[in-house]
View: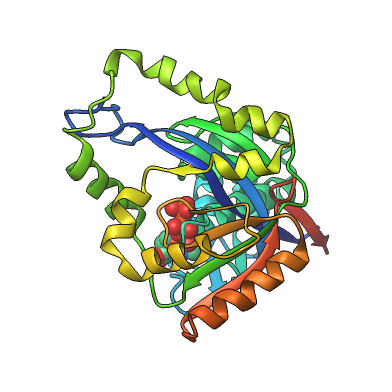
Length: 324
Ligand code: ATP
């Protein structure tokens, strides 16, 4: 096979708690990342990623979205570069790769668009170069690229701790319907969100630094995890949580207003910002209710810059679409 097409789903955060970060107040990780306790959920909204063998040693990226870089700052490019350095023999045998990104996931939206593209490239090159890597080997490689990349490989529903790379799968949540709402022109930098959280809450909100492992494991026995095991969608929706709302919502009044408009609509089970935002999501019991909410939000905020997507929870991460 010389080329593969992969489906790379986005994720939402059902839960995001900052346990520690790089400030003096909260525990400093040697690598400067934040200690997190998250629950991540794959959703149906996905990019299509093509990986194709080249007869030269170059890595080339094409993308249909003007805001996505195609140089070595693209996470998909960096995934290919990582594979070339980790597997030099395979690289010299199979040579370079051309990566085509058909971007459907909004960019800088808190939906792990870049991370899922990187995960797809790891899976695609593993196939192209016939490496036979295991899921945990792919996740380990993913952790070198970014916090959300390991989760994006297998996807589904999982607890992620550490900087996001320590994964514990949870029972699948199939067919919970979701409305995603994002202002097209609004992007939030993930680095800015964490840095601002640290500046604003790093000193006043000091956690017990000796007790980090206990705090990370507390999420495993928390109310939302119990609700996931019970498949109690109403209870899951009641227990949604995201620490980053504390910094992103005050800084982006448009997102705060959107969040409030959605929260006040009838029929929703719950709503929350995903990751570092600015995407706001709502959970609903049926596709019909999600389509209805879309109309209601559109009517309440008739701004063409506001993008609305109806999607649902899915039980997998990267999937092989086709091979040639
Ligand atoms: P996360 O939820 O993992 O924090 P995100 O959804 O907030 O991610 P991305 O869509 O991954 O954010 O984009 C963040 C930045 O990364 C963008 O501004 C873009 O310039 C850059 N980027 C690099 N590679 C990609 C890619 N393959 N797809 C999208 N953005 C990319």
